Image (cartoon, rainbow, N blue to C red; front, side, top):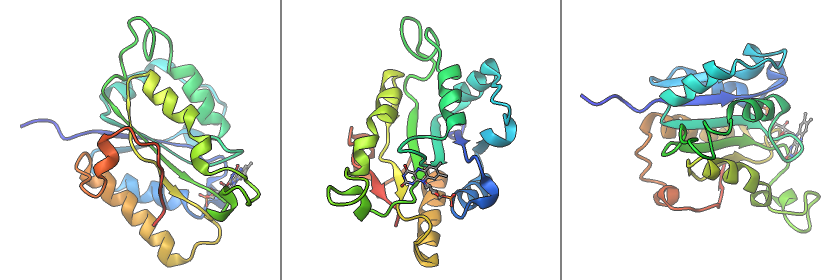
Length: 197
Ligand SMILES: Cc1cc2nc3c(=O)[nH]c(=O)nc-3n(C[C@H](O)[C@H](O)[C@H](O)COP(=O)(O)O)c2cc1C
C-alpha cells in the first residue's frame, strides 16, 4: 500500500493566547491524521532554528502549509527567520537544490482588514493578491506547486458562522488532500486567492 500524503503545517503566531482564529485552526488541524502542526513560536521562542531538523521534516512532507496571521502585509518575523535559515542554497534552490521540488505549497492566512479595505478606495489600497508574490515566488523558486491561498478577511469581525465555515473548509481540504475537487484551479498556476467562506 502506498504511503498516505504527509502534511506539515508551519504555524506562526507571536501571541497565540490572543488569537481568535489561528489557534482554532491549529487545534483543528492537529486532530487530523497525517498532519503535523509545527508551532514555531512555541518551539523556537528564542529564534534559534535547528536547520537540519527542519529540513528533515520538510523532506517527509508532500504538502507544506504556512499558517499565520498577516502582519504588516507579510508573515510574522519568526516564520521569515525560519525561511531565511531553512531554505538554503544547494538544498532548496540553486545548483543541487531540489529538496522541495514537486511538493505542494499552501498559504493559509488571516487578516484583520476587511476585503473592502483591500481595494483601491480602502485603507490598504491594493487587493491582497498584490502582497502574495514574495510567497509565490519563494515556493516556485524552490520548485513547489503554488495552491490557491485560503484567506480570512476581517478576522476580528466575522461572525461565528463565517468563522466556523472557514475552519471547516481548512479541515476538509487537509483531510482530503490531494483530492480537492472543489478547486479545479488548484492544479493550475493561479494566483487568485480563495476567500474565507
Ligand atoms: C503587528 C501586527 C501587524 C498586523 N498587520 C496587519 C496587516 O498588514 N494587514 C491586516 O489585514 N491585518 C494586520 N494585522 C491584524 C492581524 O492579521 C489579525 O489580528 C489576525 O489575522 C487575527 O488572527 P488571530 O485571531 O488568529 O490572531 C496585524 C496585527 C498585528 C499585531
